[in-house]
Length: 357
Image (tube, rainbow, N blue to C red; front, side, top):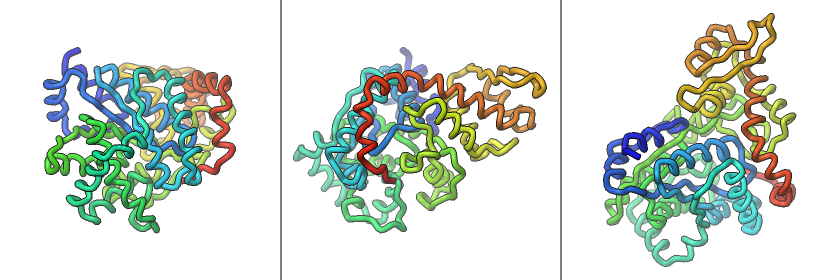
């Protein structure tokens, strides 16, 4: 595969930015199979963002010939008080994550638990080196990676989190950090600090955070208003009605989509539009059939640009769009529902625990 095709795959939606495309091109010129990673706290049920959006990008990277690693960040989840601070439950959720991505068609992933890294002397040496080269103010600016703001009362352990995540990158020998926009600050820290410590400057590829179904107020997670808006409004495991989970039943999907915020003629901060843009019509030249009663115009086949035009003009009504989006999501998530229907024991951990932010 030629380099430009590889870059095209990396750029595919929901990728929002690459820092930098020039660095990425140079990386492909020098390495046939560079290493990319994403890290996940095993902290609750997988929603469209954690499950589907992440699965799409994993597949894109793997198709581009990249060795893809997923860090199952068990200790990070522990520091961030997830699953009640129970490492046993965190491990069970990690196994559920692996099963979830497999059910969504993800293959050839190299899974690593954080405890594999934290058991190494070299890891803690890197943590110490990063700490000596980083100010407390910069660490605080990285707090959105935890889903926390500087205003919250944090434990000292949570303040350690950014240095651990930065060390993860170098301990895993990562060339490309492929994470959500909420992780941008720590990826920039890794790019800045890597050469100072004798490491390298990893490429950063940030993907869009899928908006939650409920209209949210901005919470002040980031000084960048656009990034703050994404973090504040993203789908959340701790707010079940804000998210579609990969195991939701057809009726649950219909109910949540029906209740979702979807302002008429308005695509700004519209979660239903985001599902169409980043999931249903993410493929180039893809189309979406919207079924309607004849008295409302009848069935129509649209690409993304046509959908935007018709919706903003009012020719497409939110109720018709919601009905068809729900049907499409039901079809897309069917493999996951089937898998977990046969493997219900994996889901028991969520009945035993309260999922927290």
